[in-house]
Image (cartoon, rainbow, N blue to C red):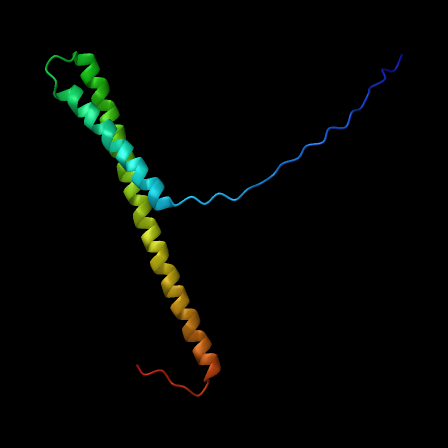
Length: 110
């Protein structure tokens, strides 16, 4: 049985990573504006008596999906707000623990 000779080649790959800062509030506002535009366009098709029924049904489906996406965006905002509040509580707990370590004789008024 004859062996095949395989030729190996080296390939040099260079990847340069760069930092990209994404502002979630700006991005979310952009998405909401775009979704509002989609909803307005769908509303026009749905309200137009000259539109074909099949087209109106498709516009209703898109409108429902757009509303659902908007609701999900709002939920994300609420989650971020809760996370910020939780971080604030964590920070206050850590500050309280540090103060207790600094002054072990201190008794909390309660």
